[in-house]
Amino acid sequence: MLPSCGVEVATSQDGPWNSDARDCFWSAYLDGQPAEFTSTRPTVEGARITTIYRIVARGTIEVIVDARRNQFASRDWTILDCPFLRLLDGEPAPNFGPGEDCDVRPID
Image (cartoon, rainbow, N blue to C red; front, side, top):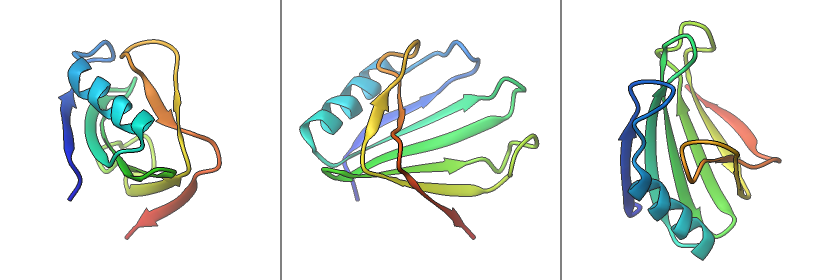
């Protein structure tokens, strides 16, 4: 079990965001410390997507996406195994996402 930085549940494209949880997770990432952060947010169409960010070890990042409620996409679970995260422009801050060179594996 990884230490949890917290959870956010955005009710719109504009948030609300859990800045403390995001700061905790990004700090853990920069320090190479294990951590987990969960974000649920609506797509532009209004479908709710949950993403679990996990720092397993330095250079070992899992991004688990639950898109089962997204009728406009695949409607499944996916794991991205990533060597790093990247900082994205815009809100919420810090706004991060999977880096390049992630391996994708579906969850059955």
